[in-house]
Amino acid sequence: MNLSIVIPLLNEEESIKELHDWIVSVMQSNNFLYEILFIDDGSTDNSWEIISQLAKKNPNVRGIHFLTNFGKSQALHAGFNTVKGDVIITMDADLQDNPEEIPELYNLIVKENYDLVSGWKKKRYDSIISKNLPSKLFNWAAQKTSGVKLHDFNCGLKAYRKNVVKTIEVSGEMHRYIPVLAKNAGFSNIGEKVVQHQARKYGKTKFGMERFINGFLDLITIWFVSKFGRRPMHLFGALGVLMFIIGFGFSLYLGIDKLFIHKEGRLITDRPQFFIALFSMVIGTQFFLAGFLGEIILRSKQNKANYTIDKTLNT
Image 1 (cartoon, rainbow, N blue to C red):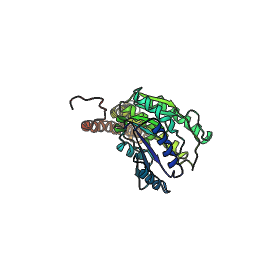
Image 2 (cartoon, rainbow, N blue to C red):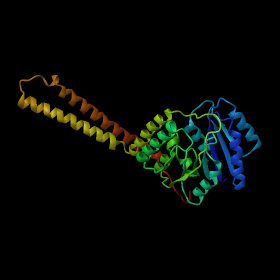
Image 3 (tube, helix red, strand yellow):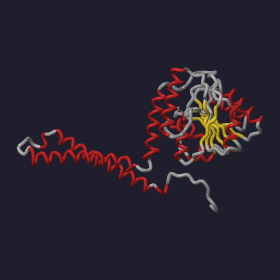
Image 4 (cartoon, rainbow, N blue to C red):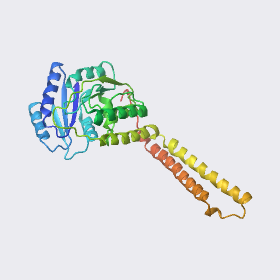
C-alpha cells in the first residue's frame, strides 16, 4: 500500500464526504494504492454515521470511533498504530488542507528520502490577532527551543515514513511537536513544503486561545525531556551541588563569625542566615538524590532502551 491518510476529526459532518471525494479523486488520478483512516474523536453530530456510510461504499475507508473526546494527539496515536501504508499523510477534516498536495508530499518521502515533511501554510486565511500573530510567536519559540527549523509546527498536513510513526509515541497534546519527537528518536532528515491554506468552509474552529498556552507549556516539557530526559543527574545534580555549596557557605560564615568575631552574640539559631543555610543544604541534598534516583531508574530500564534501530541483518 502506497499511502495511509489519517484524518482526526471532531464534529465535522458537513465536510467529511466532500473531503473524502476530493481525496479519492487525487488517489485515482495518481494510481495510488491507499487507505483513508478517519478517527472520530468523540463527535456529537453525525460524523460517525457519515464515516460508516463511506466505509460501506469505499473499501479503502476505515474508521476509529472514540466514545468521548480524548484530543488530537490520542487520535493520531490510535491512527498511527493501525496504518498500513509505506507513507502516512496526516491532514485535518475541515477542508483547510488541500489533498492536491498529497502526491508531492509522497514524492518527497519516497524519492527525496525524507523521514518527515511538514506543511508550511505561508499564506493563511485566519484571523491576524487570534491566530496569525500568536502562531508566529509560538513557531519562533519552538524553533529556538527544539532546534528543528520549521516555520509551521502546528500545520496538520504532514507526511511521514512508516517507521517514523511506528516509533514515536504521541501523547498529551504533543501532536504539535511530532517533528521534535521524530528528531529525538533519531529521524533527522526533516523537510518542509509550502502548502496551500484554504479558508474554513463549514463550522468553526475547535481550538481557542488556550491552545497557545498549552502549546508553550508542552514546549517546556518537551525541551526538558529532550535535554535532560536521558541524563537527569546533569540537571538535578548540578542544582543540588549549587544549593549545597550555598548552604555550606552560609554555615561556614556563621561558624567563623560565632567562634572568632561575635563570641558573645546571639545564638546561631536566632539568625536568619542559619535557616538559609539549613534550607539550602536540605534542598541541595534532595536535588542530588532526585538526580541519582533518576539515573538508577534509567539504567534499570535499559532493556527497554529508547533508541531507533535503522537496519538489522539475518533477524
